[in-house]
Image (cartoon, rainbow, N blue to C red; front, side, top):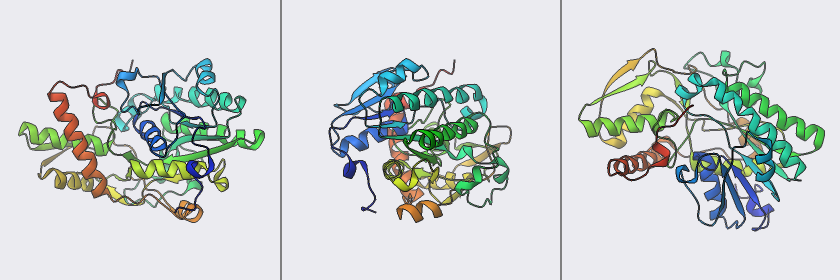
Length: 352
């Protein structure tokens, strides 16, 4: 809804906006979003070397800084009016389950960054949380009831990544309560789309399965390996909905220090997701299931009652539409890699 306050309606176009994690998927998309809205003073930060950033927007100040160090956070927020924290060591279910220490260490980023932002007089601070913060006891059935914001407590978050998100949410809430800082918190539900990780171990299901379908077509080996039994359920949010939601949530005074779901309420099983991708790829594959692979919780969906109530809006890009765009982009990346061109979003990642 157009009447919701946004950066474009609240800020001068030369106000400094800082986006961390900007070399990654959502951060890179958010920088491009603000640039396309006419903002001329953008600072993008990621610890990855610049050639490995998934997308870079021309005319943006791009810095390579590891924000788990306090002094780098101080540098990052100098002169900023708004800060969007999307920096974290994370990935899909395989990464989250196998690298819990790295996921937990992301707590250093938000701890240092929010303090630096407060000291620098930043007006609004956004933290990207996750549905992994929700109580896992409520996610044991594929036919899950949608998770509402209050379901994070009593706390039983996903080990590693989920606990880091929950604790960092609390930091944002306390900075608002004790120091009157305007903080915003969105719990993402499975974001996907072009310019995201599609290979290397950190990719999420839509990208991983799209790549597998492309590989099967390319190799002539028409089978696909699915983690778990394929009956686990999720909702998937297209990237354009995600960045629009971030903007509206950050600028809504009714949502200061208030965690809110940002996800689609359209529930799909992994098997149904594979079917959608097969339709786009024009192929039907034989399915093999790996019961020993990481599969995450049995079911997770976003209850969008609250976001509809406050913003009169919810993520609404249909999966088939978003998957078609995502598949086409990954297909191009796959061809580029075969041709020897650099594909930063699809290169294997060093976890060491």
